[in-house]
Amino acid sequence: QPAIYALKEIQAFLESNPAEIITIFIEDYVTLPKGLTKVFTDAGLMKYWFPVSRMPKNGGDWPTVTDMVQSNQRLLVFTSKSSKEASEGIAYEWRYVVENQ
Image 1 (cartoon, rainbow, N blue to C red):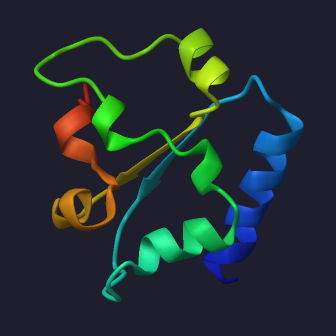
Image 2 (cartoon, helix red, strand yellow):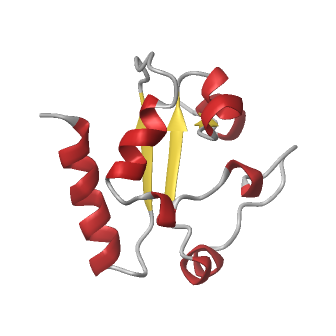
Image 3 (cartoon, helix red, strand yellow):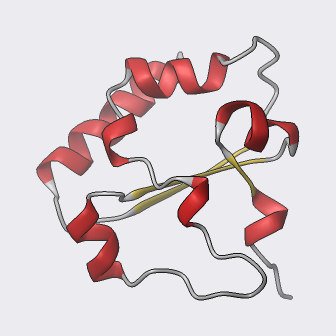
């Protein structure tokens, strides 16, 4: 199933549930320039996009759920490709996420 269908389901969910937040981690094999952002745009998800510019730097705090809901920036998207942060504005997961055992 093409990704656009799953992303359109996410768009419908966010539209119907204005207080919910979704996080997506992408194991990124997309090589087409801007290919990933195009599919998110085509699915109508950019209006919910939490921008990299608002992500915490140097151990800073994340915004509260209330702040994210009020600003309607309720979709967090992370990629496995570090280059996509500069080229497409998609957060590189290991710059913002930690894993524990």
